[in-house]
Amino acid sequence: MAAGPKPLRADAARNRDKLLAAATRAFAEHGLDAPLEQIARAAGVSIGTLYAHFPTREAFLDAILPAQLAALDEIAERALAEPDPWRGFVEFIEGLFTMQAKDHGLNDALARRLPLSPAVLEACHQGFQHADRILTRAKAAGGLRPDFEPSDLASLVGAMSQLIHESIDTAPDAWRRHLSFFLDGLRTSAAQA
Image 1 (cartoon, rainbow, N blue to C red):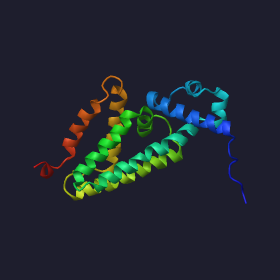
Image 2: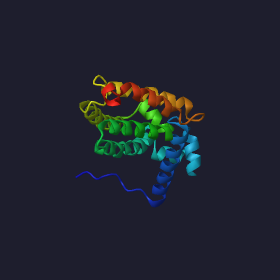
Image 3: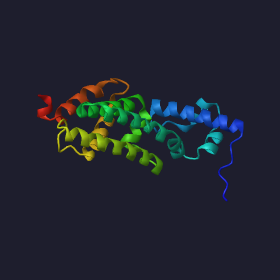
Image 4: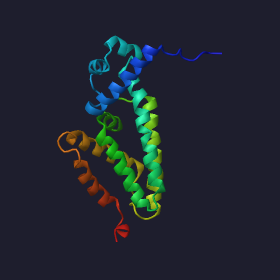
């Protein structure tokens, strides 16, 4: 029987936790290309210790992003529980972009500004499966344009990601104004009446 990974010593586990906390902050503030040297410094460890725990940037992303993307599950559950399917769709979209606006790294991941590992891509895929159910429900109720497809949502995420990326420091809520334009164009005329 194969043994699992050897448990970390207490000091090594503390260093790993400090590195994860520092990386989570750095990626949120500066994006996924935040310098690893700054992460090590913020964690109070050497760069060698950082590489011993996380040999690549992708190893950090694998440890951080899937849990952050899992927050979409809660947003999707609330959207699907909303009695008005159009309102549920809007809440899901607003929740998604609020997450992106609060975290540069998450915004970078959803915009795929860096190559993502299979684990992170699977977490993204899970979020889009929720989105598909929310879109289907909103279309069936007549609130969302019938020609709006999941691939259109992916394009919207990319466009909003770029807007968030460009304005996050100067006008952090500018994305909300632009989102209202998109939503006005996606709502059916019957639902607006």
